[in-house]
Image 1 (cartoon, rainbow, N blue to C red):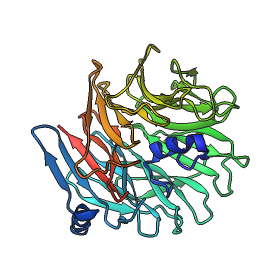
Image 2 (image 1 turned 180 degrees about the vertical axis):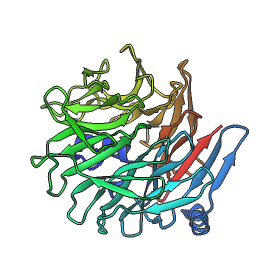
Image 3 (image 1 turned 135 degrees about the horizontal axis):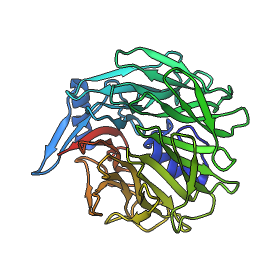
Image 4 (image 1 turned 120 degrees about the vertical axis):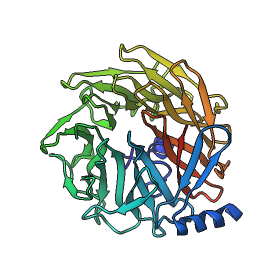
Length: 388
């Protein structure tokens, strides 16, 4: 996903991964005017009703039109949040928000300035190093690292193609500085990669086919992700630090085009969280334990129609899973699932309630802080963090 190929059956999945942004790649009434004023002032809204605190924010320069706005993607253990924002011209720019609420925006060297191009920040390490990729003026993607001091390192995986829609897509960085992602070669075939701090690369494929998504690496270097077969059905894998690769499928996962198993996060214990799309194209959450035991679950209120249901996105060191569920109107809502199986749902104030509007929870850290974005009634995205 990211800039991965978009088919009719995987369109909603791409929206889930990138956060409606795209329209960029996807991803008000009185409330809109209020949000505009807050953005101008650099302020956020904090809501607390005898429970968790929700703080909303907009990156400076974020557009306030439909399919524009702020798209957080990751939060580290220190509470730093990274992601990107889409400006008035639909150009993407990276940002990092520190624990105190200060937001710094940035662009990778060489990032394109046309609509749909720019800088996409996906992951922030405990040390504050940010990994992501940028799209140049020719729509070729390149990986980058942004140090905590603001310095950039850009890179391309060996074998990455140099045509539009090809290149290197960095998704995740761990505390050891290992970066994982995938690259599209000259034939648009996807391959996974690991880049270590000295700049050397190891590429890999699952079951002899291209890797579709490599979204997360844990502190020990274990990787989870998805590969797709000749029918474009998706299957999960876990790659151990020694390179041993194990594939798996969630029970009842569909085998049709775009259906199947989508692992999205792996914690320090190698527990994996994600979603599967069944034969009816309905999403369900799953949790795969380190011993390979796999349980599935559905959030209360999740719809049962096509591309509705439960989409687990992140698992923290304590085994708490967070993600999103789609209701009967295909509006989305946040949830977290405790290790005992209890599911708590939540919505950010001012989140819209229409089709592909609502609260999209994307990442949780060891302290239980959840970040993501919400889409308001005007289809503008805003960042949030939920704590407590």
